[in-house]
Image 1 (cartoon, one colour):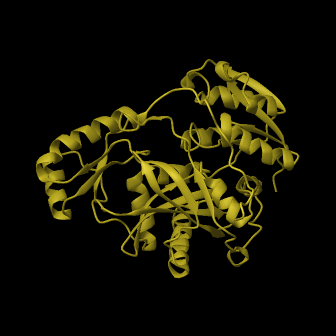
Image 2: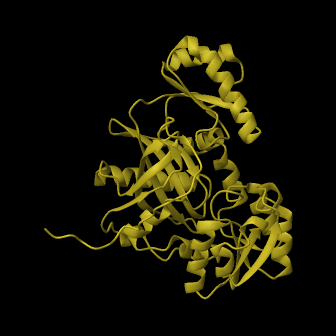
Length: 369
């Protein structure tokens, strides 16, 4: 098995610090990379070593793949943890890291590539008979053909960017005469956001819940799920409140969704930590996508399982088998994560900037009457 004594965290802020704290407990040295604007940040001072990676713009710093890898090689880093965002779901980066002789703490480049495109992901998981939202399983560019397809599916429909995420390149169409304009907007936004204008069409479910399953998979084909998170409360397709477990999911359904999530991982020979997202409506669930990384909301899963997901990622990256089995896992309690969003409440809650004037950390004390 591989030995990991030093990890470079190719990220910043909260997630960089999160990874480093686990590494410190495991007595693994950490390396922080930082842009000029982050030089006084907590994650930089917390690391054992630090490297100035460039100026503030991400393209010149945190997204500068070759420079990051070059520096990692120079200081004899054993592994790179990508965190979430930035390069965490970049197949080319994962491949370059491996070619440089460094362990990538995450899945293979192939798994990232397959699951990074919604259409290829749907085709891949379909081999395991996993339920999919009714719609087209291929990209479509001709507006008239797309409109005909939408009529067959039945309005309302959802136009989605194949390479998308975070609500970019996504449009809900309620009736036929809106379709052409909304498709043009979806294609344009997808091109600008992802450099890929490919879109596809699905039936729009009007009252769905967003349920995601955390999985762990080792490099020997063993896969387990760590139950679900309910991320249904969102604003502009961005999660606001996440809880684990969901109050709507029965044990029987939990087992079915968990096994489906494990099969999604198996379909692309996945290893590492990942999240399989489903939409749930009328007691039925449908595969949405897979996130091939750690997610922002992973702590709510840690709190109900007692596991440290970063530690499990490192263990898997070393080439070790999973240390726990499905039967070992139990749900303990209930956990909720609430994101603090910078918004303007007087302007339809649009994203905004400002200064936090008061912040009080919730107390763990119980109030008795």
